[in-house]
Length: 313
Ligand SMILES: [Zn+2]
Image 1 (cartoon, rainbow, N blue to C red):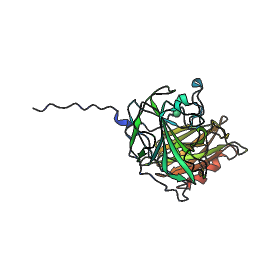
Image 2 (image 1 turned 90 degrees about the horizontal axis):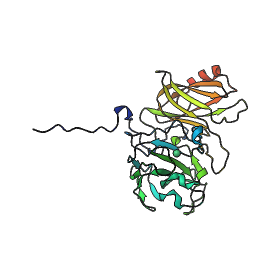
Image 3 (image 1 turned 30 degrees about the vertical axis):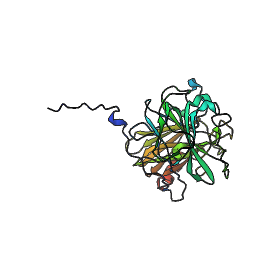
Image 4 (image 1 turned 135 degrees about the vertical axis):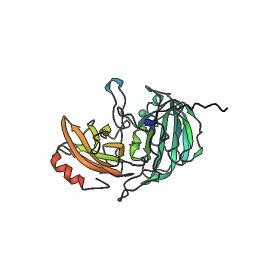
């Protein structure tokens, strides 16, 4: 008699996500999208950035964190971390060993892998960074292909729990010096670079005050019109052009991004200094829907206007 084998299910089924679309992907009719990277973690693990510490935010006050230069994907120690695209490993060691602005306060990064990709953007080199790894299984100079395992999720460096901290950095325009590395302040929102899942899209936008100035730290909530469920929450960021700062996407000039939004109509709500501003958009698979939320524009005018648009909001 053959005994029944007990299958050890390590993750509850509700954590399983749909497959990723295939990068590189740019379905935007004006060519503004650049979903050229896969996610650094497989779909059956956690690819959602921490809501409490999105890109460009300062996180919970109690933790006294820096402006977040990447996104944090919480996963158990040992989850496989994969190369987001084809390229060459340019760093694979403890972040402490490097000098200068590459890691800024390097102790906080723990074990890090940095990949320079084989493709650029607007005459700029593209690098991805994977931090807090338990184990690094690549070496500097090594060629990697998209999906290749490069290390394991860990909790090295300054962390409150195991996760991979993922960054996308762009080089200076036209700088192809082999020694050149983009600095800590050269990051961009990874959610505008990682390919969306099947059946989902991305909402990016600008939240501005009545003078047209970008608003910092405004809460943005995305809610499905069909189900009433919250599809995503984030906070806005601003740009000070400093070493510890974040940057807007070269194409979109956004100050917030919400990823993993199911296709269909959604209400996007920003709270600006206690005032609620909202608009309704239609999210299309694999593309970015752009929205402007401003105190200067009454919500009753904003909604019907953007309801008519399809791919770009
Ligand atoms: Zn992080």
